[in-house]
Amino acid sequence: MTVLADGFRVRLRDDVVHADGGRLLVGGSPVRAVRLGDRARSLLDGGGLTVEDAATARLARRLLDGNLANPVLDDIEVPLTDLTVVVPVRDRTEQLARCLAALVPLPVIVVDDASERPHLVAEVAHRHGARVHRLTTNVGPAGARNAGLRLVRTPLVAFVDSDVTIDAARLLDLARNCTDPHVALVGPQVIGKVRSERPRWFERYDAAASSLDLGSTGGVVRPGAAVGWLPSACLVGRTDLLAGDADGGIGGFEDGWRVAEDVDLVWRLVDAGHVVRYDPGVRADHDVRGTVRTWLGRKFFYGTGGADLAARHGDKVAPAVLSPTMALSGWALLQRRWWSFPVAAVAGALTARQLAPHLPVEEGRHAVAVRLAAKGTGWAVRQEAGLLLRHWWPLAALAAPFSRQVRRALLTAVAVDMVVFLRERTGVDPLTALAARRLDDLAYGSGLWWGALRHRSPRCLLPRRPGATSR
Image (tube, rainbow, N blue to C red; front, side, top):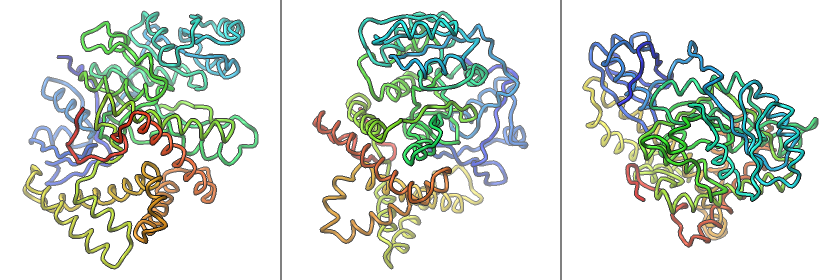
């Protein structure tokens, strides 16, 4: 079994709750509680830990895998010779030129996915010192990435789409995560980038709320965690594991998939026992769509992938994870009635009572349980708001004319969604955000339902209970 090398450092996340005099750590995603012995508590007294023996390596691994700590990578360097970049492209030479200019001096393989004007792609690639591998049949981004992956001879490979800009230094910074021998794949924060001089309303929104932007909190990526997938727009991984050459290798992306291939890749790596990380300390720019039609069309297209994921990965694709008690609490609060808070309080108390016996602490056990239950109630409200506005909007629209409860819940859901959005995102005014959010939800939800109908299965639309996953 591979272990963390001596000198590897980790630091506890800021959102971790300390209880029982520092003996109990509560946090991560999914939330967990870790009881510390006296030596472990003393080692973490300053919030950080350096691996110096087998015991500290095990503790560091436990903290990293539980999303209770992040690696400290500032003093680690990855040489240029360890990384090759694969760029799949079909025409789009202007974007390709911008992408390749940023990647100099890294070795780059441009996979031309049957462009209509391949000579122009070749000219741009050669101008920037990139190697070209041309496909005569269009196979889509997943197949093109796999074609490039088969040509890579370095221990690390990066996949960078032609409409993404990230310079070589930042890509090497991202690759530092792979100094953890358990990490098979890592992705940066992908930020929407407007190229037009006078951004239109949907471009401003897409730059502020790109579907590929997974937020500012990093950590281990897995189904059910705060970050459950990574976009394939920009990734760095271990060549042998991705290509399938090593034990536990997965054979790259699913060749036939043109949507959700990135989610599938991440989940297959996790199923194989590997670690996938999200590092928002590194950012990549992704060009926003240039028209309303292409913007909404892409949202619809993303939605159609839910049914494919459900067919392969089962309940991992569930749009919400709710216990019956938390579901009741969230619905009560969405109703905004006189009885909403009493019902939510009782549900929260029941949840805290169920949690308390499982917390490995004596002093302050009930206070920690109440805090976790309150956090769970807030998350339940957010999830149910998302279900009503995004995943289940066709049902909500049909029921609203006949149900005052549904209308009230929808209005509350919109308010909750806007409060969360405006708190977490900047660069777009409230009215634009309100209109764009609803169009975004309608397009993605429509794609989700289209995929479900095409597969004749509602599985991608159904929430699940915590801990209840199946294929």
